[in-house]
Amino acid sequence: KKVGKEVGVYRALTIGTKILGPIIGALIITMYGFNLLFITIIGLTLIGLIPLLLTKDIKTKQPFSLKKSFLRKDTPLKFPFIGYGAVTFATVWLWPLLIFLFISAYLELGLFGTIVNTITVIGVLIIGFRADKINKIKLIKAGSILFSSSLLIRAFATTIFQALSAWIFGALTWPLLDVPFEALTYAKSKKLN
Image (cartoon, rainbow, N blue to C red; front, side):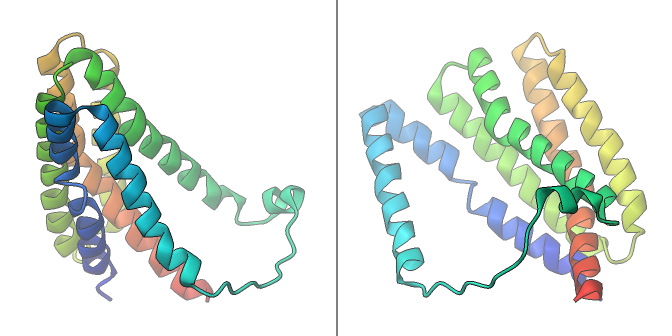
């Protein structure tokens, strides 16, 4: 019954782990250069692989056909996930690279990334605690319109102020879309299982 709250807390924790990353990365690059940051990331990745290597694989045989997967009755449900993936790729990977064209100072970019992630965590928590009391479909519709407008503003940003304002606006509106979408996804999967 409290799926929205659970999703909100989960998403806040996952995004929260990224709050200090941009500023720490910027400090390492500024003080010691990119090579140390690269070596640090490789080391952390290798450490992160240890549990994966120590975990026993559980394999279940599932028949799969690409053709049949698009002929199923739930095919329309796949399109929101495709869009979700595209938006995530654009905002998490491409947007920071484009912002770097405006802000070439690593420290400023890292600080702003930390600020945006903090705003997103606060928004996710607020929406998460309220999502169970509000119609999730209405939240998704409002979030889609508002977040899409932030993407449109980003596309036409010509100054650093416009670009950063659009980034903050996107951070404020993304939770309206993300939290209820995830909550509905989990609720639907519980019904199917």
